[in-house]
Image 1 (cartoon, rainbow, N blue to C red):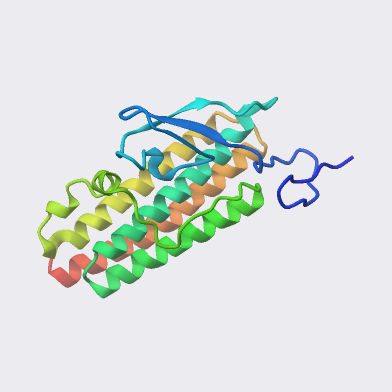
Image 2: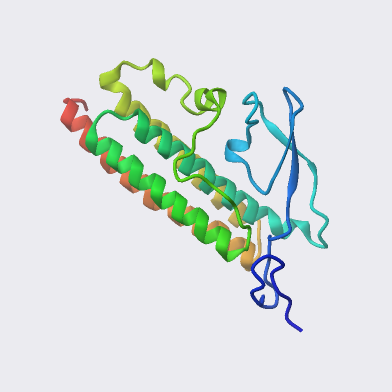
Amino acid sequence: MPSTCPKCHQVLEEDYVCCADVTYTWKCAKCRKLSKGFVIPFGRCENCGGSLEVVEEYALQDPARLKPIRQALQAEMNAHTFYAMAAEEATDPDVRALFASLSEMEREHLENLSDKYHAHIEMDVRPTPHPKIRQIILDEIEEVPAPDRPLALYERAIEMERRARAFFLQQVEGLEEGLEREIYRELAAEEDEHISLLEAGLAKTREALGRR
């Protein structure tokens, strides 16, 4: 007999992963504050910006199946937060518009994944991270002279997307055909699209600034 989601009560197909009742307990390695949630932006403490570690795994017969879903949601949440902050930092209207568009794309991806796997994640349209988390995300960028800051933002974004793409493709190589492998493939394809948009934006901005 098909099961149902405990939150939205939709009927779940066989071999479907539902995350509705999944909650992790996270502990800050710095201040030891405990937090709860399926994913947390950048895996950082909202109290001090320290790194978080899972201290309570969800009791599931096959917890490995949750891993790609959690990593997918984490990646989308991180990217949404970064691009929202980058849009606020950008002074050039075209650069700001691109980052705002990417932030919205990541938010939609996050919502789609959350709906697909019933994660029911609550999120802000315009996230406001703790100042220390902001400092970590924009490390050294705020020190770059204002005229060069758009280039620094583009380069940081491209680096982030390339690193994420490499990670997802690495996961694909180690998995057999199935749900988990397909999730990583989809994520890698999204990174390709974002990298192309960012590289085009970087080239346009370099040309406008008279840089090579």
